[in-house]
Image (cartoon, rainbow over all chains, first blue to last red; front, side, top):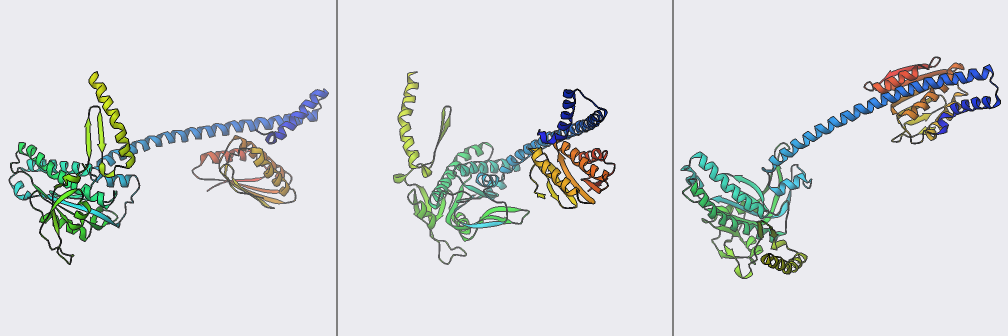
Length: 348
Length: 119
């Protein structure tokens, strides 16, 4: 503390010191000192009282802060639990986009270039008419679960499930560019066809005797994508003629077929083989739409869409479509090291 | 004299016949804050017949408490010298701490007109 704040007290002390030095104490000086001492004592008492009051107030605020932190911590835990539950209702990309704050949760949409996918199970109603409700629920959930795993692993944004139908798209909220998005989408559709074949073995074990077959439709183009609805209830989805066309391709596809539009074929022709199929007429499109059936990977130029291996001591994820030149170089540099590791293990 | 409020000091305005202080008071250097105020107060009190003071504080620390003891002593002395001194200690209704501080300062005010005002 500065001497300035106590200059009156210091002046008084000097009088006392001077008197002691002079060895002279008259009654008047004594009265001044006494008055000063009384004032000092009074102020000290009040200061102590105020200080105690401040301390009590600080303690109270500190306690309040601790309680507030506990409440906040509890609310955070609740929010975390809630967000985990909520995440199951959203596509991972949409969930990430919202929870990272990249996307605003409000009514609004943008025009984006998307590759849109539709699928459904052929004759699902007939199949399920013969099933017990429990088996129907188990089989449909098993199917949708397996399809979701395939979709998510390829980076799709799952828009919605409508009974046994799935709508998904590539290009929002994340995009690798129109071409890569389209290739990912067609690869996903072929993977789904394969997955359904495997799933049918499992479903047969629980009493689904008629195997599931799916048909898929894919189209690429400019769509309107965003949040539609009211401020109270939003639906993140894609709409527009190009979406309708994808849906029509799906309904026109044959059993176990992936039917795509000319636009999607042009984007993916380096990676897949196709067969020209019948033209279809779609409302909103002046001319007939050329359609193509995807017959498989283009073996000559085939690049595996994903390398994914996970086992004890091995975690490998390679996505050739987005592999940078640096990453390719790193892989080549790693190969000799991997050989050494394998050789060393053999010797041991 | 006018001092803008800072994070640690209140807004202070001193005119020929009044002084207002509002905010929190825990300056890093209490003397640098308090001495100009006390000097200005004594200067304004000297020629005037009446002077009014309004204080509305939300928090002050121990050093500031010592300053306020001196501040009120100057005002009480002026009242003893025959000047009309009116003081309002304004505090928020929920702020018991500032209410009690105002009551403590009130004990020294015999000649000055000192009022506690709940806001």
